Amino acid sequence: MKTRIKELRARYNLTQEDLAKKVGVRRETIVFLEKGKYNPSLQLAHDVAKVLKTTIEELFIFEKKK
Image (cartoon, rainbow, N blue to C red; front, side, top):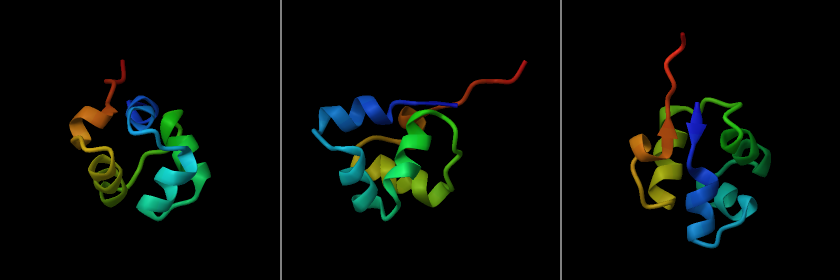
């Protein structure tokens, strides 16, 4: 899974720590989300999308497995 978190976070001048505090997780969780190494719960995906003023569909890009 790819994400646009880093790109959108930069648009709003938010650090990983800022975003983490706004959604109630640790900074490491944001790091893993940005690297595509963590699949968020639906609630976390919703919260991140809301802070970044986008939709879950625009924020997370799901790649089909071959």
